[in-house]
Image (cartoon, rainbow, N blue to C red):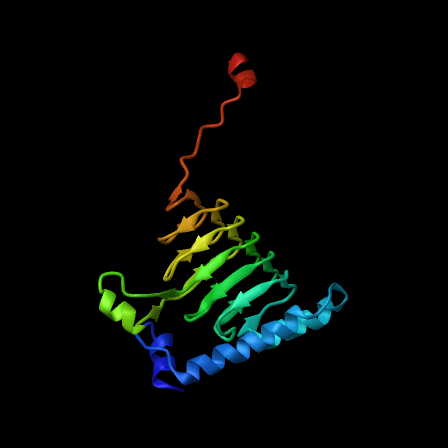
Length: 195
């Protein structure tokens, strides 16, 4: 294991190196082979994805196209559904719980660069922070989840939202940045008229 890989997986600042570039290249080659398969070869496609990813539970469905950086740092629980054009930037671990549903074009982005130090950013420093999606979470189409975020079990993230901080279990968040939706009281004019 290279020092950069060790630092990357530990969530420390690191610089890219030949070892990391070679691992990403192998991942791209695997994804290219997967993308070349037709719809009649879905079973073979699923086997190749299972070989690429760190863990794939039972009855997982990943629609094409799927992109990731390394593959090995992705853990998918049982019955996960990943819709078309997903991007999992798995420089840090990405853990997806059982029964999670991801809409089309969801992006899980673990990598970050120095914000307050343009010199370090220019030099190529980066770090990666893990992303976790709790069981039965649902992320709508086009959702972007930023580094270090945990989305709790049973949470819902509205389409097009950008998730910059943790989402509590069972919460419904929407917007950019995603914020918890205020629950409205259910009032039915018919039931009020009977009181």
